[in-house]
Image (tube, rainbow, N blue to C red):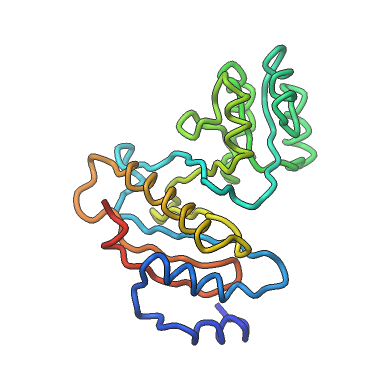
Length: 231
């Protein structure tokens, strides 16, 4: 992959071979986030899990203490009183079967997270081929299949993020914006690592955290000292 001049210059500002502690990594990545927009701070956590095994899957959600810095658009699949509740709680879009052709045929995807009441999952399931590959399918483990739509919406707007393994057994998660203070980023980072450590599959043998890399949207990755992060 060809890298831009700014990326290459930023990569020279620190030792790529060194494994950094949390505070130093945040300081480096934040200082390198010099794009004209507010870059997202990201974590890429390589695990020793085998995601093909059901007993080694990792999936869940965590509310970041200082939010994500991003305005999230929420679509809720619900009917009747639950639809009214979702609207009152601040959902951006609420609907049921009538949304299927709009999403399937018209390619409407003006939302970032989908929440559904359990009774609507039969409807949502028909959109699996569209929502699934984009990571938008509601899931009970992530708290997005629930009768308590008010809590789900409030948590998401407060800074709730989902995490799960990709095909390479890596978890990719945002933990704030470059404009956040180092203390805010540190708190958010710790909340994510605590959740990831808690989600360690009991069936896993060997190392759980293989590597943790911190980066910003446009910046080079900073490798972290995994020994201090696992618990």
